[in-house]
Length: 357
Ligand SMILES: [Zn+2]
Ligand SMILES: [Zn+2]
Image (cartoon, rainbow, N blue to C red; front, side, top):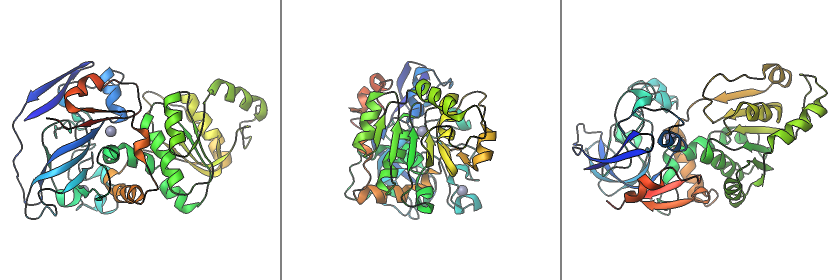
């Protein structure tokens, strides 16, 4: 079968590899039908994140089951979402919902990201993917949902969702701030999830006009970030006191830092209301100072870490199926698999590849 293989930044090759065969009663083999580019994929492809090749590429897939063991709980022809992280559903960690850190796999085990775990599990931009513990892993796509619309549900959509969903449940109607940037689509999905879950004001700040347009489509209020200008106002209003509560910025009970730079992180925390919660969804590469004095004075909780994609997936799909949440507003381009190499470094926030091979 054909498998898109990352060789080095700017270089991909289609390799012929052996098709997978079923190894256990609980496992399944699926054929990807719609695959989305994860925010991280762009940075691996461009070399911004230095991952050594070669490895199978792509890890956000909606797929059709083509073969399944008798205990896989899916059947040939079922359309499913394949969570990008491998998890068993049986260990204590999985049972607690922490499917990101399943005890049955190497840490950070995922499709299409061999360097994160050291193990090759295959990629989504392939004819076929092998799914162990399919009885737990695979989530059926609700009938009314277009696979292209929710192609990113395997990873980036729940990644945005988890930054706001539980907090909005605890604080219904709370105002939400998302500072967008590096984690391009994750920040947008966080804004869309917040709107869909009945948040009050949802403000999305980003210097990129394409992403701001997507945020507006999702129902958020989008404005340029203009960090220099906003921070200028902040320092004057704060009067230099590290314990100043508001720092002169509008305050939000729930904030999301998707920008990926230190100044934006500080701004996001400054914009978090007393007793509020801030989630960092961007990966910060290198040393990252935290404004702990400010956080202490305001009682701010800061959360970070990888999403537990499998655990959050059913709630995400339910919200999409009910018509409240529209991840497709983020999709900037749809191309067939055969054009995926050329489209991989597109600047838009979400590229979806449809299987034509
Ligand atoms: Zn990803
Ligand atoms: Zn597990």
